[in-house]
Image (cartoon, rainbow, N blue to C red; front, side):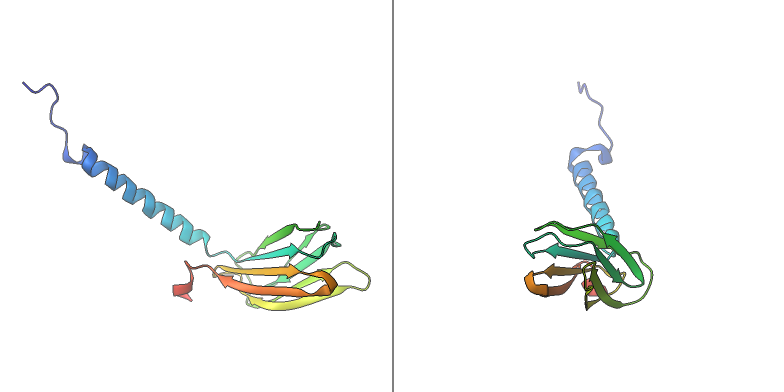
Length: 136
């Protein structure tokens, strides 16, 4: 006599666990792909001193940040409006310090990294999300 009645084929562990794993991985992939479209600008303070308040402009958008302590960073996530422009950084010093350089689009998974070094030197480079590279 069999005490347990037979279960439906879709309720068996051999089918249910791999199916749940496939659905979970697919869902995580879709969420990651959708979130990878945002472009960001990250600025690192490597000057060895606290920076004056700074303003970052790109793609018709602007954001101001308070004084930036040594070895800290700020991040500016661009909204999906506007066109491709250069990134501009202004420091509220006397005289006003300005820099503009790397091109960025508001969409497409771009990440512009800017490092501010002593004596006004700037190191900047652009990376693109590997999720978005095949589509650009």
